[in-house]
Image (cartoon, rainbow, N blue to C red):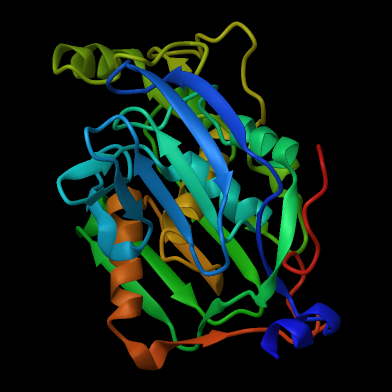
Length: 317
């Protein structure tokens, strides 16, 4: 009866892929070759990583409690298996509204590809996005939730508050002449902008001194000018320069979208942050989930009732 009703009702439906799509790349930190296969998934599956390289494949369903490490990336784990650097792929899923997806992966790190979410957006859109016969469930924030760390000059914070839609406002604070010359504040509203155009192409960034140190520790082995914005003390080293005038802060919004989507459902909230990162974003999700009175699960029986940016499937580039 429910399925019959949903086929004729204008309910806002869950989404998955129409077909399988694949990518091959290297992990940012491990430098290993990685094969990624994105598969359609059944209703209410959520987003699930599968470590198919292990003797017995291990599934890692995405949720806030699955996050086991937030140093330089978001890592999820289950049964001793882990997948690192999931935030760019998760950001693409958030931006395109993908609810159910199986991700087969042949190593412990998602390939960095071009350092942004744009390659994942291309993969998902190339596979096609299909609506499914079940209502899409949202987490609607009902009361403000905030987390803070540090004090005075070292302070950083992140906050969720009620909003009929999904918008993100981020401010960065780097003592570097190149970043200081670009926009350090940006607000993106999923209902008023285009994720693929405005956010998805922003690349991860780093400084040559930091990269040299990380490589001495066995990290950033797959990083380079083809998958990150690199800077020395005075300039951007990439020959093509920046993709956006404010690419640095836009990448932080890209990351935040991916980190927040780990909660398992799209958020209806206003997110604001100052110098936040993967750790604080996950701490914010856990704080929200620890306060049942601060949120509720909702569906929309008509597309006209849904916030802008959620009702229609995102078009191609």
